[in-house]
Amino acid sequence: EPEVTQTPSHQVTQMGQEVILRCVPISNHLYFYWYRQILGQKVEFLVSFYNNEISEKSEIFDDQFSVERPDGSNFTLKIRSTKLEDSAMYFCASNLRGNSPLHFGNGTRLTVT
Amino acid sequence: GNSVTQMEGPVTLSEEAFLTINCTYTATGYPSLFWYVQYPGEGLQLLLKATKADDKGSNKGFEATYRKETTSFHLEKGSVQVSDSAVYFCALPTGFQKLVFGTGTRLLVSP
Image (tube, rainbow over all chains, first blue to last red; front, side):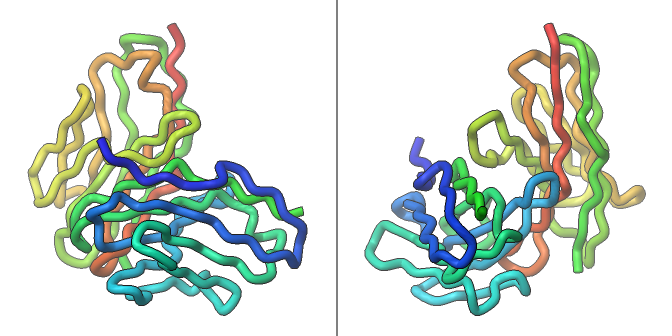
């Protein structure tokens, strides 16, 4: 069964550094998402992306965050200047239609020191 | 906006015990309701869903009934296995493309 793949599985970075989290959604899916889960807290929506633009974003998704689909397969989340509180598990997801079930990747654990 | 409240974990059970994980929701209208599961080292997987009131979602021996009277969607399984050890998330949509999740309940099943 096709799956969403995320790399790396674990990223350690220093505060103030830029990070790029990478995702390859399922190939025929049209909608792409990033969620995050700070340790011990809820899984939170960050952003949705369709037709090469952001369709919705949460208040967490401020100017430090950006998303891009640079080619036909990758979907990336960039954090320009990481803060300690950005440490979390970041999940990529995709679906074929906006209201069909989400398919999640295994996540990237980001640790900011 | 829509929200979901899930029981705290961890829930520790012996194999073959009965499982209930409580989930209640607050929502405008009657949105679809979901349970997702996260096995160790893996991503979130859709376990089951219910799309309207009184619907029962089921998969892999797990069941949950969409109850609008009590605004609940409790997850149940009659006989858990060690392989069911995972974190379980209740979720519902808020807006067109956005899911809101509960905090997750860790289930630990011992042989």
